[in-house]
Amino acid sequence: MQYEPIKRSVGRFFSGSLFMRKLLYFLLDILLLRTWHIRKALRKAKGILPDDARILDAGSGFGQYAWRLSRMNRNWKIKGVDIDREMIEDCWSFFGKAGLSERVSFREADLTTFSDPGKYDLILSVDVMEHIEDDESVFKNFHRSLAGGGILIVSTPSDMGGSGVHSHDGESFIGEHVRNGYGMEEIRGKLTAAGFRNIRIKYSYGIPGNISWHISMKYPIRLLNKSIFFALILPFYYLIAFPAALILNFLDLRLSHKKGSGLIINAGK
Image (tube, rainbow, N blue to C red; front, side, top):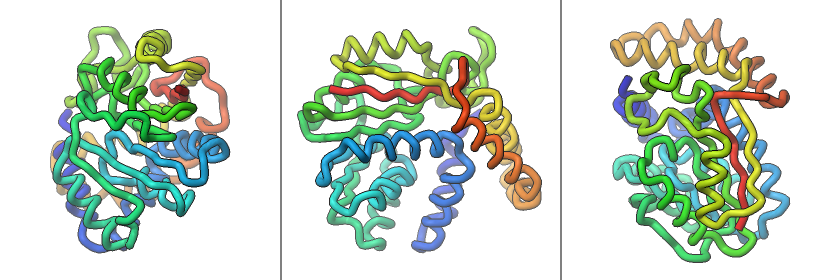
């Protein structure tokens, strides 16, 4: 299934006014389980980061994580980079209207070549690496771009059902993915080779999270991929699915998982 056309349509629908963009960020925050895990990781990182931290949102997309980071500390300087020019332009527009352009900036860039040596105290990359074939170059660029003592936080699918795949020869639910997911030791090895240390990896999207993903994301996206007119029934669908998804997301965040379809990675320089 092609996810990018739907993503682009959603972005255009919620672009324009500040209210609509903030509404998009709110909906992504509560619907996407990965944002729950990232919020938790960022809260932990906040206690370590300097008050004037410089942060890279690597693969910034809609800008929802840059928005969250900008609200966590008014002294942080945040740069979002993405290969999608339309999304970069939308983010510039929104953050300019929100009066944040002095401390939140955006740039169109390819992460396989992008590097700002020694500049960032934190690099955040959420659901990006599964889209990039040359991941080893990206990890090396991340390490090069971190300042000494800097932190890398990555969210990406695992090889245990990530991308909606449950067999080695299965096809990804998201057509744009170049890999279905990472094994823990596979990504640990690539990060170590790039120079990272103190690598900590845990599973997300355990049993409750996987169920939540199916009812809150997979099924609605499949319907929208068939016809945009299914958007008319989605509000009624979510009246039923949303409360269940919230409970399942809460359980996934609180429980420790022996396996899961997502990985949350924290590494240092």
